[in-house]
Image 1 (cartoon, rainbow, N blue to C red):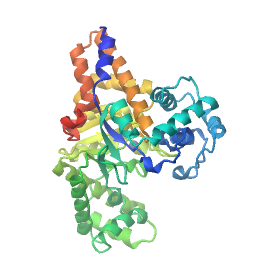
Image 2: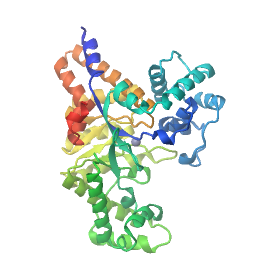
Image 3: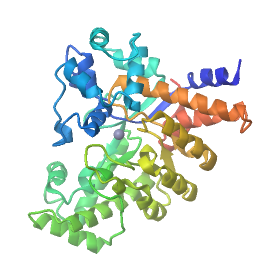
Image 4: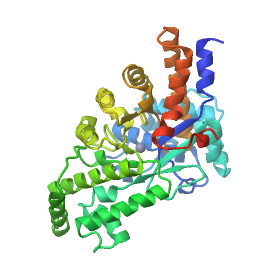
Length: 418
Ligand SMILES: [Zn+2]
């Protein structure tokens, strides 16, 4: 067996721990399910549509849906060469056993028939995730209820980070009462309670998504400064952005302490956020440098390879022992490969993880297959060049695909092999 065949066989038989996904529940998808509904429901396609201008920029979350194949086909014109679409399409072809190079109305109808039938089967999600994709654990980042038999929860504490803003505050106040949350000590007490509840619920990590609304430059305000900021936020009609930031910074530092106390990692979105007109620099991981040094016992996992800041992520992980890197959500195949190729040389491979960032089980299948293929090709090249042995290549593959995630996210390995 050649090196390439060996590695391909090995990598396609190793289980994957998917560190990051937002899988839509089956109930939230239409019945009968169609190929059109798949495209409308895919968050990754949605980002492509909106960036191409095919859909309105007015409100990313309320974008209208395509009504038929003709509308979809027009929108596909500008994104048909983009990596996510290619990976998604190739996944759909393989998963549903279809044979077409590009989508046309005929292929689309055929796909729809297959999709409809698949979604009638209540075990379809499990079949695709566990059997077809060989994903043994999926860390689900969502605010709603999740199917615990299939997904592992990741907790969000956004309501506390954004407590300065009335729309975010409402959820926390509703849960804990206005009086409890009107003082800093009371608010932090509620945060601790929710954190503990998340731990008891089995959360694998805490997720921070601040990049979507602010620069991730978390300073270290004093208790007094934070108490004044809370007072200002509660008293002013209009959110005072300075006070919102001070309070958010204080909360994020407390979350880091709680993560250290409970041994739970903090997953941070870095790089550009989805949607339109986002300030890309807000997600520059270099802003996290001091936060990670300030909390040496907290495990920080930087997501999405930092977007355009992959080199910055790498150098942070090289400098800071408690900084880990996750390649989730990097959809462009060649740049993903180039980043990984560089990181393997520079970052201890025990710090690298990968996840799908999928919305649909079809995404899971497509992205897992694409990543396994890329990893096999990359490691084959390294072994053939004499860079390391095939045994080391196996170790590196296992580490990235599941061992590091099991260790950092404290997922029992027994479960990952079931
Ligand atoms: Zn995500």
